Length: 184
Image 1 (cartoon, helix red, strand yellow):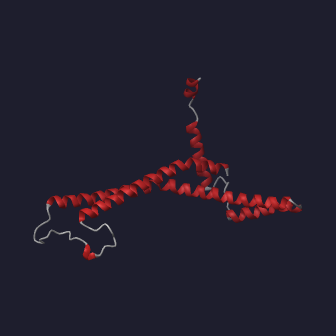
Image 2: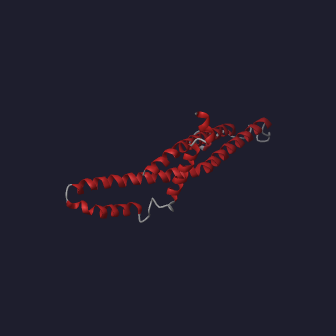
Image 3: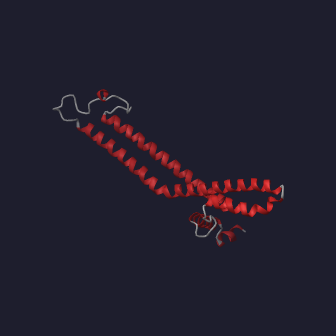
């Protein structure tokens, strides 16, 4: 449980940073969509009736659109497309961080739930001779929570990820030999 808690603590700043960046990029994309809709002359409300929409053509259908208006509309459409591409790229780039955070969070929550139930069982069984049954109850509860898998096994993907992540963090936090000598 301690390792999973440390792993979650290390992942949290990355998770929050990813969420912040994604929220900012999504807001930028939505703002560019609004600007595009204004340039195209579309209503800002999706609930506006079709007949309330202004025409995107010039008053005289035989007159071509003003070139600067066409350029502004094209630019607004390209800006919205670019903002959407940046948002999608960021979602793909941050997907591993978001997925691992969810997995580690779920693992820690499950461990906490299991520990709470086991502590309540210990309190009940401690009062009498039922304490001899605690190992059997512990095994049964553990089996139900983990469905036959071992969350502490070295082959478990979350355990491996957390072990690797913690070892990288410890290695990067350890001072190099040159730093130790210069600080003395």
